[in-house]
Length: 154
Length: 104
Image 1 (cartoon, rainbow over the protein chains, first blue to last red):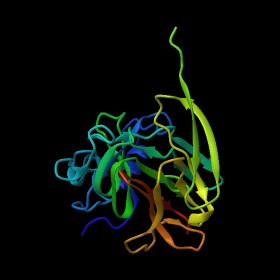
Image 2: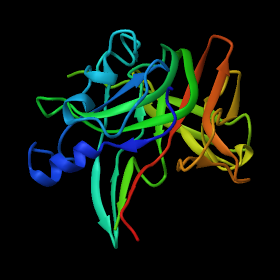
Image 3: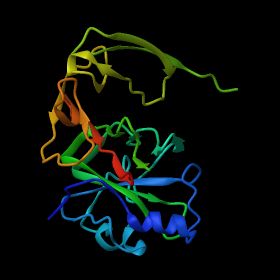
Image 4: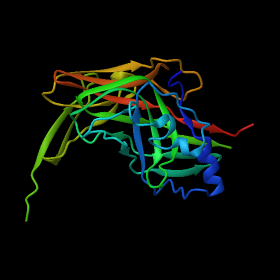
């Protein structure tokens, strides 16, 4: 198994509803960390294992970085928005771009979005790019879907 | 007082007729994007005039299943737009939407 889908962590929803963690999605500073194809993301893990550098998201041997452009721990998700329209909740943000235009990133298959404001660095969602993505001496951009990072429809 | 040096950047797209001009701080690492008619409506970069490169859409390499992926104007699932320059490569990776659906 490896990457196959994009999901919201169930434990994130549970913790948000229970008030276990002080999630504040529109004002926190989530980060976007890139990963290779060695991992098998699972949306049903306990909250501790949604975190950056824990469980399946262990950085060593799995995280894809460029020291200057997309460092370990990832790039900050800028201008997040948390909105409701009719029966749909949407979490969205600006596209996430490498810090410089001379990054080398090899074999990024997907990303973890986690809340870097929380002490536990717990995950919100993960997103599968659909295949290997690479840049050399260039700019890497994660373009979020036109409908956002994730939605809840009731 | 520190003077702000600005530069004029002229942009073009290798896949459609769109051109643009921007004025920005000389030190700024700038980029320009547009919905490219030549790439079937996908988000694609513009290039500074003088930079030779190929900009191509890459179809998704894996099964789509229930994923909410980016589609081009022809309905094909696209996972990235890649810019291949003489001296390197850029990539826009399209992250799918993650969906929680409680509708019955």
